[in-house]
Length: 601
View 1 (cartoon, rainbow, N blue to C red):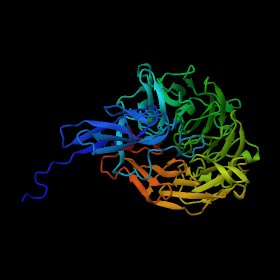
View 2 (tube, rainbow, N blue to C red; view 1 turned 120 degrees about the horizontal axis):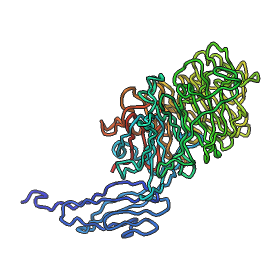
View 3 (tube, rainbow, N blue to C red; view 1 turned 180 degrees about the vertical axis):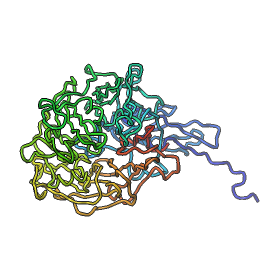
C-alpha cells in the first residue's frame, strides 16, 4: 500500500503582491500574481468580482495594472488561476485622497493631526506588515519636517505624489513620494561656490547644536494650491551672512514672483544695537540669528521668525511678514527693542518655539518668545517670555506673560520652547483656546480672545496653568480632546481635556523614556477613529527610532523601527525632527537621508 499522499500532485497555489495598496486618484498600481505547481502561470484579474473591473470599482489590465476610480472606497483585486479556477488570491486597494501636508505639524492650528489617513490603522501597523520601503540620500542634514503634496502635475511626467525635503546644505529636493523614481523630480540649490556663495559653517558662527553647516533649518511652507513652496535659506556670500526668502514652483523648483528677496530691515527701538531710534536686522543679526521656527502662511502673508544660534548677550528676537505673491515685506517686528541695561539678558526674546511654526486662525497669528526683557505691562515694547497675538500687519493685539517671567528668564526656563496649538473651546465661557508648554514643565491654557496679559502674583487670570513635570520642548498633537506630549527625559503621555481643563494626571502613558529634547508627536486617524501617535525618538549619535502607539491608549506600542533588526533603521537622528504621515506612508528626515515607511509588499 502506498504511503499517504505518495505520488499525489502538488496543489496549485496563487499569491498576489502587494497585499495592500493605498492609492490616490491619479496613481496606478502594478499587481503581480505568482502561480506555483503548474506550467500555466496565467491568471484572470477581477475587481470586486468584475472581470477587468469597471469605472466604479477601478479597472485592471490582463497584465495586472490597476487604474483606480476617482472616489474613496476599498476594493478587492483577485487573481484567479486559469490552470485551476478554484485557486485564487486577493489584494486590497484602499482609495485615499489626503491633499497633503503643506506646513509644519500638519496645519496652521499646529495640532499635528491628519484625520484623513485611510490606509494605516492599528491593525496593520506592525512589523510583519509595516516597515521601511525605501530611502533617498540627500546632501545635508534634514532639520525641517518633510512636506507632501498629492496629485501634483509635473511637466512631462504627469501627476505625482511628491515629498519635499530641505537640507542644511541649502538644498530643496522634490522626490516621488511613492518611490517610482530613485532620482529627484527636481533639486534646487542655493549654493554657488564659483561665485563665493556657500552654506554657513557652524564653527565660524559659532554654533554647536547644528553642525557642520547651516543652510535651511526652519520648515518651509506651501500655499493652499500646492503650487508654491516658501523657504528661507542662510548662506555665506563672500564673507557676509545672508538670509533670503525664496518662493519656488513646486512642479519645477523655479523661483517665482521675482524672488528671492534678502531679509533685511529695521524696527523702532532704543535697546542694544539701536541707531537713531531704530534697531537694524544687520549683518550681525544675519550671522548670529537662526531661522529655526517653521514658516507660516496665512491670509496672504508669509511669517518668518528669528532667534539666536546660542545664548549670547546682545541680540533680539524678530518677526517678519512678507507678501505671498510679491515677496514685499509687509512688516518687521523686534520682540525686545527697548531695554538696554538688563544685566541678565540685554534684549533677547528669540522666537524659535522648539522648531514649531507660528499658529494662525486665519485672522491673527500666535508666536511665543523665549528668555528676554519684558516691560509690556508698564506700557513698554519688550515681550520676552510671552505669547503674542499678531495682526497681519505685525501689530501686537494681545499677549500673555507668566507672573514669574523674571525668574524664568534668569533660570533659562523659556516660555517659548514650544509652539502654540489652537483648539476649539469646550464651554461658552471660552470658545477658543491656545495651548502651549514651557521649559518650566507647565502646560498653559489661554483664552483665544483674551490671552490674559500679565498679572504680577499668579496666572489665575488664564484658563489653566498646570505643572506636569519635566521641561517641555515639544508641541502637543491632538485627537478627540486628547493631547499627546513627550517631555524631555520622559515617556509619551496622553492628557485628556474636559471643560477646557487638563486632568492633572495622564489618561495613559507609554513605557519608553525619551532623552532631550523629547519628541513632537504626529497623529494619524480616519476621522475620529483608528488613531495612531507617531514619534521620532532622538538617540544621540545613533539611529532615530520611529515609534507608533495606539491613540486610545499610548501604553500600547504598535510598532518601532528596531523590531525587525536592521531592516527598518531610518538613519542618524536629528533633534526636533517630526515624522510626516500621508496617504499610507510615513516620511522621516535624518542626518543623511529621507526614509519612507509604509505597508510591506
